[in-house]
Image (cartoon, helix red, strand yellow):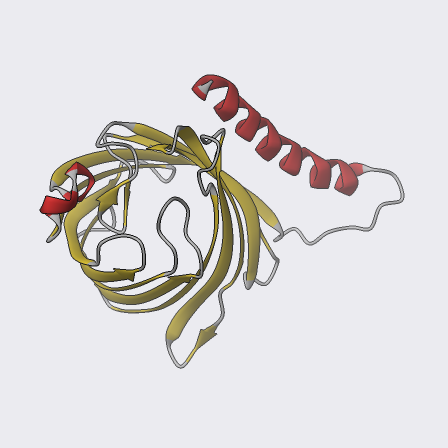
Amino acid sequence: MIRTTILAALSVSALAVALPAAAQSAPGSAPTSARDAWSFELGAGTDNRSKDASKSGNDGYAFGSATWESADGLFYVGPGFQTIQAGGSNVEAEFVVGYQPEAFGYRFDFNVAYKNRLDAEAGYDQDAWEITGNASRSIGPASARLQVQYSPDAAGSTDSFTWVEGRLGWDFTPQLTGTVAVGRREQNGAPDYTGWNAGVTYALTDALELDLRYYDTDAHTFGEQYEDALVAEVAYAF
C-alpha cells in the first residue's frame, strides 16, 4: 500500500511537469519565459519531525515534491508527499500555493497548503488546511526567521492550532550551515507544548544535502512522538 501510494504521488508530480513542457513545445503554443522553472526534491530521514514532534512514529520516512516558480520568483505552486504513521494512513499528500516578495531588506513567504492523509481509517479526520507566514533576513553569515502558522482544523483529533517559531542561523562555510530554533504550539484537541531543535546542514554538492539535527519538546508525558531524537536526513534537489 505504501509503495503504491508513493508511486501514485510521484506519477502525479511527473504529469504536472510533463504537461507544461508539452505545452511549451507544441506548435503554435505561446512561448514561456526561460526563467519559469520546475524544481524537484526527493529525500529520506530517520524520523519525520514536524513542529519538533514526530509524524512517523519515530521511524524513518521518505518525502518528495515538485514546485513551479514564476519568472519573477514571486509565485510558486506544487504537489508533494511524505510518509507518516497516523490514523491508519502511511502517506500525507499536499498541495501548496505561495507568494514570496522582498521588502525593506526582508524576504517574506506566505503560503496556503491543503493536506490529506491518504487511505486513513473510516471516521478519521484526514485532511487539513494550513496557512503559513515567514519573515527572514540575512546579514553576512548570520540569518534569522520568524514563522507563524495557523490551521482552522488540523488532521486527526486536533482542531485549530497556532505555531510560532523563531530560528537563528550561521553560515560557517559556503557548504556548512548551523541553525537553532524554538517554537510554541497552542492547539485544541491536543497538548500545548514548546519545542526546539538545533543542527547542521552540509551541502555535499549543489544538489545533495545532509542534515543532522537534535529535536526535543517539553511534552514527553503525552507520548513518544514528543520525546527527544537525533535525526539524520538526506535531500536531493534537481
